[in-house]
Length: 172
Length: 105
Image (cartoon, rainbow over the protein chains, first blue to last red):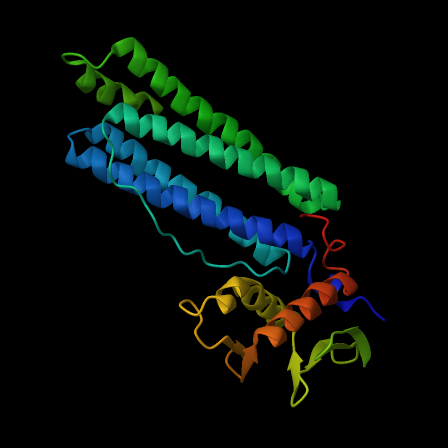
């Protein structure tokens, strides 16, 4: 029997499922950062709001990168449903700590797909994810640096205002 | 046409000449492209079979399934859903598009 299925699709369906899961995760991250931008705007952290608007855009770009990879490989990319977005934060420190937690989750998920695609011998998916592995190092590092800056600056007195001003250093 | 996989109620065929697949649903033969087969896989895998055993979540134990861009409509009971899941799972393994069953569990 001629292998016409392989001619139409160049990755395994298991990789496709995991990448569809990642699409959902990136969409969720984008919506979460948009909620954080909203919180920052409402609480007077206008520079931080700009930072999160940009982060939201970046996460959507990541989602589209995976979506287009599935299109290119003949897969079935699924437009994600995004629900349960948290809009409540106790402070600007809480916002950035939640961001770091979120980025760590994304990193773990990417690493999991890399390991699974390696297990499947799916070299295309593994190589495709190289960029994401390095991108996550950068993303985590950015948020860690901001949290370090917050610790040094402190939240007393004009600290909160200084924190917001300093976040501009991480807006490219 | 070659048989790709046969489950209790359904059979998946490949027509190399047409570059298409066929699913024999018993009362109806459906011609399907690989994209449509992937879409069917997504739909059937998204069905929560646990809901069939909870009368609040699925009071009748049926699923309505539309295939090939709404060209076909099927009403499946619990056993038929499970059998179609088996056909799709094993069909993709036989087509070489899925790793061996259980590899990712």
